[in-house]
Length: 353
Image (cartoon, rainbow, N blue to C red):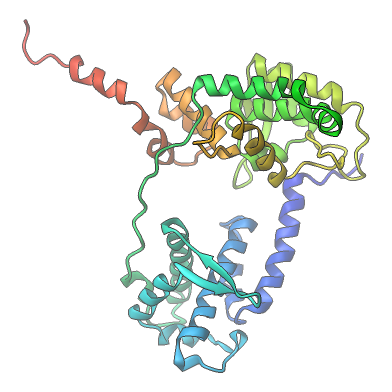
């Protein structure tokens, strides 16, 4: 039997190699920290942290006269004790706009980006402080920015129908090369978008699906959730129909070696990537609504909203969406239900008539 490496294992291997490259550019003492968080974080999270920590050291080299002329790999762990709360506040300000890399590319962070980078730095400092390798932890003295809740952007029920109809029939108006391309990708695109709308899975979970993960006997798909847990998500008749139509087309595709198991293929006959799915969702959604920026994640919100309005069960929504903490779900979906709150006003009788 062949030894099959899954998409998620492959991604982990690539991320591990990438992390090693980033670590070479950081001060040598940082390796202890990344080794310590290995067991509790995903490879993707560790790479994000490594980039965030690198920005902090870049800030020190650029903005702090005490470190003029030094290079990043010169830093030793005692540098962390030389930093005061005021320096951390300046760093927080710096994160809003700075230039990165040799190409002098302008980077900006909104409140979410700043918060994440500050949380990375807090975790970094906490590790060395707990192990008594440093005596101060100025990061706990600085407030992390407050995140303002944005409204959920999602498709309304009529827009969902319009989107699927459009994918199914927009080829009628096309000619020549465009028509050929559309016909080639129509069943795949329809299956992809129907699956995202009908199950609420993440785009990374979707591109990671293998053909063996689909079970038509129980109408379920086995997805690998964020953090690596496997779970079966069930789907309805519309998703079943779209998947079966696509699988007929898929039979006629000869994949590139190493991509035989992928459920969804790109036009290059490889496993389709996250970026490609994002592009195709945007392409179709633009034809339906110009005021909403629809991404695969917004299709997830659309599903979560519909499920919550149908069932009123926030725990079910959290479970199906693969949220570890129901508060994440509540934050997003409980605010929707104004009509339910109105019912509450008339539900409680204070005095009998």
